[in-house]
Image 1: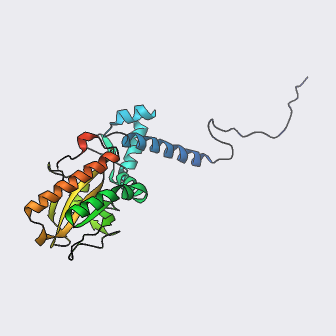
Image 2: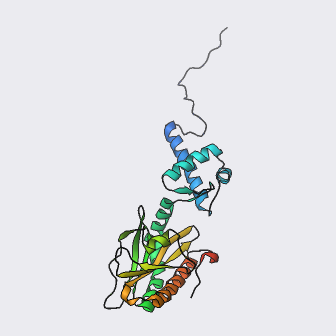
Image 3: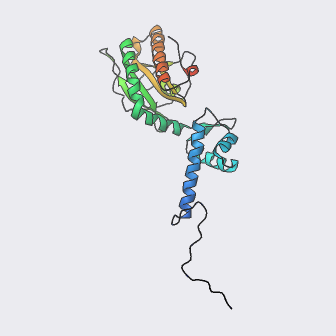
Amino acid sequence: MTSQVASGPRKALVPSGVEPGVPAGRVSSTRAVERALALLSEVCSREDVTLTECARQTGLPPSTALRLLRTLETAGFVSRDDAGSFRAGSRMIQLGATAIGRNELARLAQPALDRIGTATRESAYLSIRGVGDTAVYIAQVEGTHAVRHRGWIGRAVPLEGLAVGLVLRGEIPEEGYVAGRDRLEPDVTAIVAPVRYPGGIVAALSVLGPTYRIDKATMHHYGRIVATEAADLSAQLGSPPDHQETSR
């Protein structure tokens, strides 16, 4: 006697966790994106983090975490220091700063720019990192002198050789600000201080005015004004007190 097996359409075997009808390649790509985003979130939530910590916190094998972190590093979303620790990369900081700049930062900075302009009578600016090695000016209060600096809103300038570039790169002396003759406009002096948020430097506040009107004493006076306003704005963004400039 032979047993009868009911015939009918056979169901395709689908791997666990894969939705029927979804190509396996697409699932694999989605999973890789999810893992990369988890790693990116972990890196950006700290000042710096090791590969071992990244792997442990995200539940990934160290080899997988390293492969994805290297991809993120190549794209500029994370960076790695000499000790091998990872932190937010320039591209990630740029995107974050751009998003903040377009939504909230310019609005939050407006009172500080107004106060700087009133105190110095010179033009005050807010700038963020732009594409590549550039800074972009996103807000301004124009000076009240007959001869004044003007017209840089939306302008991208190179970071190299400029005071704003030193500040956005974190190369800031103990005074809390950088001052110097502008390389693009040699008759202009720029005085720049960093605006910080918990992830690092998000922007820069600056005063720009004719060099003939800004002697050494005036430069230091303006520097203290800009550094104080930058520290107050940083506090609004949640920057830890030990990163704030408090010189007055």
